[in-house]
Amino acid sequence: MTPAGLVIRDAEAADILAVRALLVETWHATYDGVYGWQRVAEITNAWHSPENLRSQLGREEGVFLVALIGEDIVATASARPERDGAALLTRLYVLPAWQGVGIGRTLLQIALACFPKAPVARLEVESQNELAIAFYERMGFFLQRQARFDGRDDTPNTLLMAKRLFAE
Image (cartoon, rainbow, N blue to C red; front, side, top):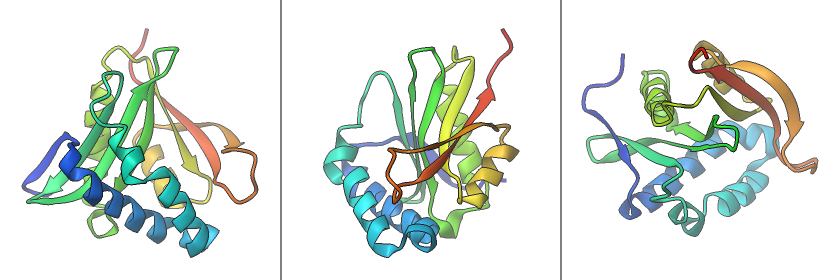
């Protein structure tokens, strides 16, 4: 059951700082114990800079969503099409205080619905993020393979997961 008053909409330029704060908070809550605070700060500063987030707004080939309760952004999701027609979920984060109440499930469903012709959805999840892995498995995703993000030992070790969206 999702919270009353949940609104999901396209992200706007005015949302960028709140989305960045959400991403920094969720990354630290999730990954400080895995990579350490300093490495998580480096990753979030690079990947979730306001400039990087702004560059993702309004892309015709993808979707960048925010979920709000009242005026507060409590979650975000992004997805884009892949060359083979699959939908690639590139981001799904819910503030820790709002996890477990259905926001992530609803946001995932809406993000994937933006790709009605995609035969499959794919995503990457850090191999030690057990809560996210369990969530994606509940949502019907299965493990395809394991990979290291960029070959460095201090970057996320990811699991590649997929979910069939419709039968051909």
